[in-house]
Length: 271
Image (cartoon, rainbow, N blue to C red; front, side, top):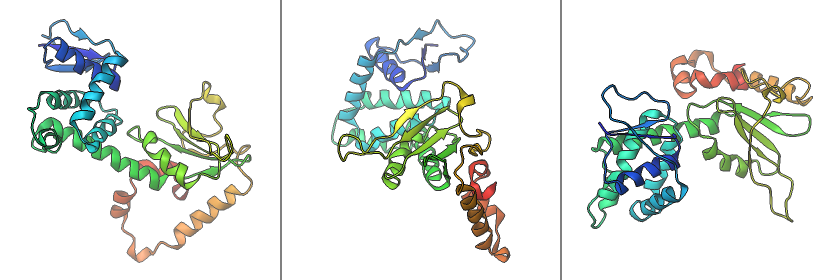
């Protein structure tokens, strides 16, 4: 059994595709570093991530796939699901092996009967679904310096997909959205930069998590940082949430379907 191992990055996977064609091999298994080899596997080919090779593969994909097809690859990769590695690798290889002709490549990316294409599409849909949920369920708190902060912990790495949404909606105020599971966030400063040009979101991390001004377990800002008025607004929001609820029409099952419990710990109305 021919096995490839790579560093579990998208560039690494694209480099694995390059190596597969360059060496005229078709690995039966693609594993991320640290994953256990099958019992009777041959010595694996270790893929050394090469940015130049990855870019060559990506440029080839740009020639053969539609914008939606490329989007499907990048979005599905944000799922961070190890089980996606093999189907995604197979799908990209099939794109380059597909016979040329009118709409041949487009028909491949839409071919739901192909198990690899189907898995990539389903994974992409799961990520996009969580992207929508994040837009709906993020709750900001205001710090004393005027910055709005929110903590999330999504199953998939969707922060890069939602930042533009919040930049468009809240482009006149500073905010920080932090992923507690992946230990990074995006900070946006509304202060004008270079004339009338607004700032852009900056990816940030905290070297010392003890310096983080909020409780990662529930997303609450520390009391010494929380704005004086924010607690009042939180209480008002909880009161409103309870007031609009019609007890006779309560449907807990539907609520759990529309608002999964895993999001509750960071939602003001559920604290």
